[in-house]
Amino acid sequence: MFTSEPQDQLYHIKSERRKRTPVSSNKGPTFLRRVIVCTGGPFTLTLYDGLQADTQPLAIITAPSTGAVFPFNYEVEQGLSYTLEGTPPGDNPCSVVILYRDQAPPHEGGEILEDMES
Image (cartoon, rainbow, N blue to C red; front, side, top):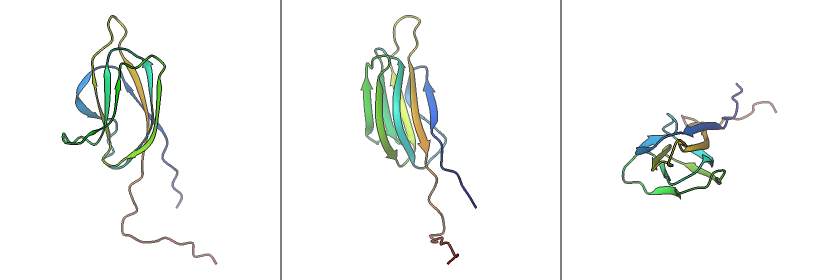
């Protein structure tokens, strides 16, 4: 049976989120590719591994410039989450895109699959 590789996905943040918010519904490993700031300003984006209150931040991005790109290429084990505090002044809401990929869960059963053609 053929299974395709997981595809990169985009998560668009458009407003303040003071409570940890999951990036995807995946509770397992997530590969954080990069963060792209479409509209920067006086806000702080904090990234976490999971939703647990006692986990330390993976990254804290403060007052990013419009167009800034933050490459990570990092796997988080408990799923990616974030908070965003502060908003740009005026009518320009913040706009941040997180590029990520949900990782496939490990094969259950512990079997090693082999090609039987020899």
